[in-house]
Image (cartoon, rainbow, N blue to C red; front, top):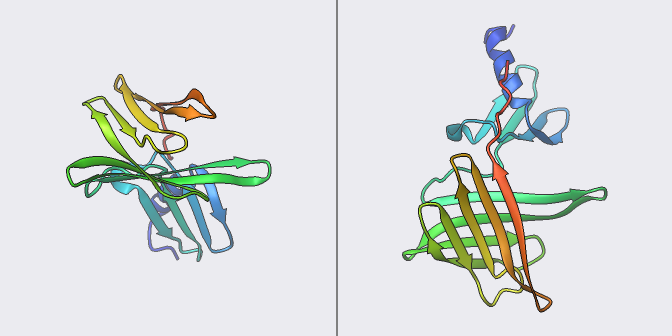
Length: 169
């Protein structure tokens, strides 16, 4: 007999069954769920059915003066590459630390930081030499990387917008 009412277990199963499935086997399941509340960036549910379920967001909210993020490229042949990122303050400087797959760590320093934007630079890096973020309105952010690649200036933009999340029922 379950320890919780069916309504409670249905609520948690619905919440933890939403988002991109990363792994599933007979006893454990992991999903990325950007719709989870900020205070619940990672959740774990051990079910009475003997299975465990975990959900996490791709960008973790600021805690202890840091922000963590991750990204990956997946194609027909599987995982292409991935990158882990860390934004932190150190010795009075705002830093963007990139950990790309198969490459050394690159630490960019904020050259310009305002209420609505930040531009990080690392002039000696191969590409990019600059990483930026700019808030657009109350629900969008434009991120970009730019610099010189093969003797030519290049800029790649990544527009992000808040979207409504489905309500778990």
